Length: 495
Image 1: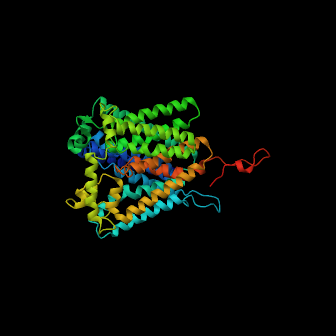
Image 2 (image 1 turned 90 degrees about the vertical axis):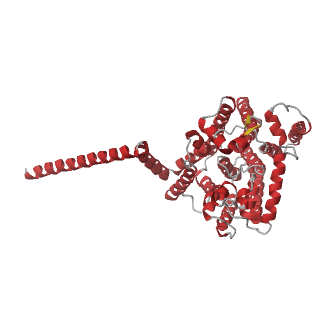
Image 3 (image 1 turned 90 degrees about the horizontal axis):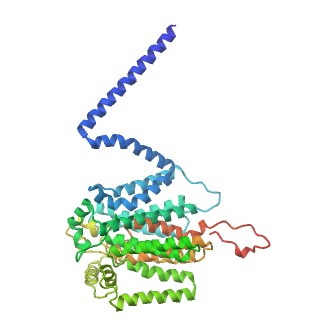
């Protein structure tokens, strides 16, 4: 009896202690909320959910990577939508790091003797560029190491992280299709939001963003250049031109009429999104990407017809005034004018930069130009000179050595991609890879006029596309066993 009584008393004492702890915790939380307000209350609510999300991502890193993909489309517009200066971009860093940590905790096993998925040319090319940007920390011309930390993310850090992740965990053809449709759906939403800006009106946060300085580049001659929830109109226009090219190639390649009409409709929808962005440079995504697609087809008749149509469209814009009453047509036509004032200013700036960089083969250091330069080294020549082009940015910040290395890497990637995509046998997979490949090369070409290559979400789409089309044979079906009716030559090779 005494033992039962003791256990009963221990239980009562334990329950009482737990009750006191619960009451004390509730009082403490109440005091904190009463003093900190909504922010502290939100922290207590969001904290456990965030912890649960981290645990899930560490167990299944693909979850954090898909979250990164989705967030990359929204990260630039959240500040305008919520009217806050919160650094949402750091969430991108956190998600990529979380994905890599999850992959370390859950390593993918492979059969003995099978080479690592990272043992491909694209990984070594991106790794070489990343190492060069790391060495830029030692650049004696660099004015700010802190600027390097912020700027290197868009220049090389995100690129190497995404390439590693995609090569290791996105090895299923189903994931290729999921990525494509994720991109298309977000592009539809972006175009709809841009139409709303153009034909209905802006939110208060968007208006404040324009009034804070963006108005001088986004409202020209009384016309708004729609920017959707992207960083600016130039980035949005390039993204729409990019996805227009992809949808058009899919429309031309689809054998089924229903899907052909779907992609054709999407191509027209996205092209109008490109038009209301009022961006001229992104036109070259189509100018470069479409002929490249025709060369991939290796069909002389189709190539001749396509080049004839492209030449006719070029001549219409270049040598006539057709459609000049439409503002969007005016903006597109100005991209072909060698005497355009904006182009002349860019060329003048590049002339000044060439004199400055003549004795600086390593450039001024990552983060020395553009927004990061104005933030961390204000008043310096590089910070106060407009860069505009992605390649001018690379040239300014990493020198002629870095520019040559970067351009050579892109050229080699383009050559590898052409060979790999040409060898694909599966028609559906090949059409997708042709769209991704031509889009990548088109955006790379158009980045001479804009800094598209290093901006979210375009860089996310480009980095993932690069991996897919350079290792596309991984997603083809396995060869079937040989039979008398199926000679070995017809097998689909796996490389």
